[in-house]
Image (tube, rainbow, N blue to C red; front, side, top):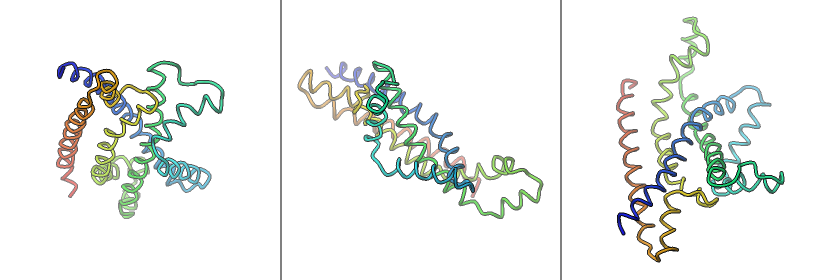
Length: 218
């Protein structure tokens, strides 16, 4: 029975891992772009972006999942996500990417704005363009400063993936709950915590290693 439960939970964990990985892949670069928009001197660009960030950060991710999945059917009269598991996954991924991109954008913004203006001025004196200044001088310093808050968000993402079951996406918690309905046993649900702890532990070690590698910025 233990082996059967472990295999079933591992299958669910693969869904969790897929949602986690693709969310990071898309939300990190999108968050950087959003941070540029939120710092723009052009109000017509900055204000709408700041409003969207405020809405996303101020409402529960579960509510956002429900709105994104059911909203098109309610307001447009059609399901834009498609049917089956792939449609639910696409909707969940869209919600997670938008949510985490907004959180990451604030971390990026804080990191960029924490760099002293004197470094920008020195780069300008040396004849570097704004793009060269950002990618050659500023970016690595920003990465050093944002690794701790980014690591917190990434570990939170591991646990937040369980919310995707609200739209019937099959992840590890869903698999654990299935045994309650089919076999009347609850321990597989608690067993899912082992998967989360191991994965979070590996990520903690990874980010600790990255922080040590960036120590040369001290």
